[in-house]
Length: 289
Ligand code: PAF
Image (cartoon, rainbow, N blue to C red; front, side):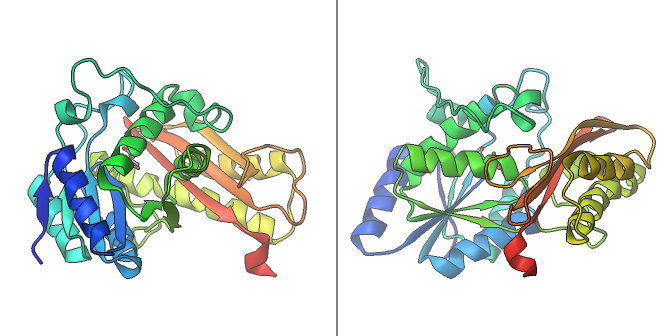
């Protein structure tokens, strides 16, 4: 079946109603477009566990601050259609800004706690924008399952909180980050990097790998782990660290010493040149026992 492009929320909802009436399991993969192999892996994962896959493509203005890269965010609609279709999508829901946020739109969903630190500290209204748009996308597509990438780790926690708190009837799946062969986490924003910056940016995945290895060797002191992250990052010049932190992977709490049974996440946001990049890795005690 060829990819069907849907622009209107009403039409998307009516397609979803018909699919549900036909007992089809709907999977959704929310994206901001400029799709790459990371998105393709999420679409394939959705297609493995659902009958009809909807990819949403919407560059959500509400999750960008005024000084951020909304106007230059990369876009390639035709390529996105090809990648989505090849990966197994049946529908591409690509509403306009006016369709999503018509005149008079006044609602914002705000989640406290986990949204306040790290990414939320540097991008204060970002997670309100994410929570608001994800809710609208779920209400438009009425999925049984929704698939997100681990690359935006804090976002995945925010979305799980949103779904639990609002009793949204959707199962959330988080799939691993897909990386370039040298380790750089795939991101639509990687296109901003010059060749030199792309090589420099390898320190980011190296930093989380170094901290992960230290935990495997028994290190549980948070400050020590943060020092490992920062030392690796600072091995290149011209890097601006926003945060390079170690936290409990479920709560984002930051104890001085992690217990032996705690899942640990390493979270990084840096600027290389004018490009802001994030990455993370989760160490899970159950995986190594
Ligand atoms: O991860 C993204 O691409 C976006 O934050 C999302 C979830 C599509 C909401 O705009």
